[in-house]
Length: 338
Ligand SMILES: [Zn+2]
Ligand SMILES: [Zn+2]
Image (tube, rainbow, N blue to C red):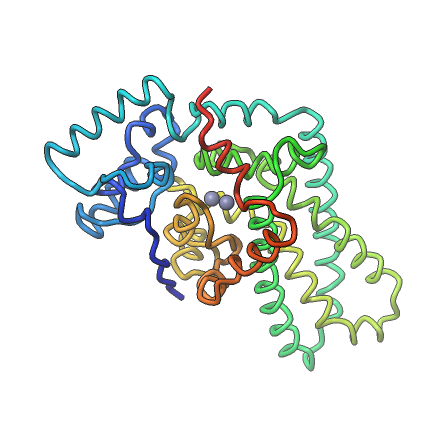
C-alpha cells in the first residue's frame, strides 16, 4: 500500500536533491548509516535533482529560506549558511547542542529499567506463544486471522497515539517521565540518526515495558483457565498477543526505517511491501514541525488519519482545554544552540 505524502509547506523549500546541508557534515561519520550520502544519491536517481522529498535534517531549514534555486544563489546560500552555523552550531545531528545535552541525560538507572523490561517481556512472549499455539483449533482459524490483523492495526494506532502525545505535549523538565520517556522523542527529531547507534536494549526497552503487564496477564490466564475456556478465548488472546508483539517491536521497526545500510533482506522485503514502516514513508514525519504521520509500526493508518485531520482535531481540543501550545518543548530543543 503506497501512501502519498500530504503537501508540506517546507518540503518545497528543500535544497535540490534534499541535501541535508552543512549541518549534516557536522553530524559526523554516522551519516552514511541513514539519510546521508548514499540515500541522497538514491533519491536523486529516482526523482532527478529538482525533487522535494523530505529528508531528516533538511527539515531544519528555516521557513521562508529558498533552497530550491541552483547555481550561484545556492552556493551563496550554502556559504551564508555555513557562516551562520559557525556562530550558531549545526541545526541537527549528533553535534547539535540540544542533541548532545539530551544524549547525556541517558542514565544508568534508565538503562537498568530497559534491561529488566526486555528480559521480562521476551520471557513472557516466549511462554505465551508456546501456550497459545495449543489453544488454536481449525474452526477458529478465520477469527484468529482477523484477530491478528486487528491487533496489528491497533498497534499502529497505539504507536501513533503515544508518539503524538510525547512529541506534542509535555517537556523534558517534567519529573521522572521527562528525562526517562520524553527525552528520546526530543533527541530523535534533532538527531534522527542517533537511533541507528542505539543497541537492542536502548531501542526496545521502553516498548517492552509497556507490554509486560498485558503479557503477564495473558500468561496468568493461559495457566489458570480451563482448556475449554481457553479455546473460547483463543481469537481474543491472539488479538492481544499480536497487539503486544507489534507494540514491542515498534521501535525496532522504527529504527529499521532510519537504517539505509546493512539491513537483512527480509526486513527490506517487509518495508518494500509496506508490511512494516517503509523508509520513505517515515520521512514525511521528519519534516519540521513534525506534526503528522506519527504511526510508526506499519504506518497503515497515517494516510487515513491525516485525511481526516485526526491529530489536528485532538490538538485543538487539548489546546482549548489547557491553553498549552502543541510542540512548544520540541521547538525549544530544536532551537537550542548552546
Ligand atoms: Zn516524532
Ligand atoms: Zn523517526
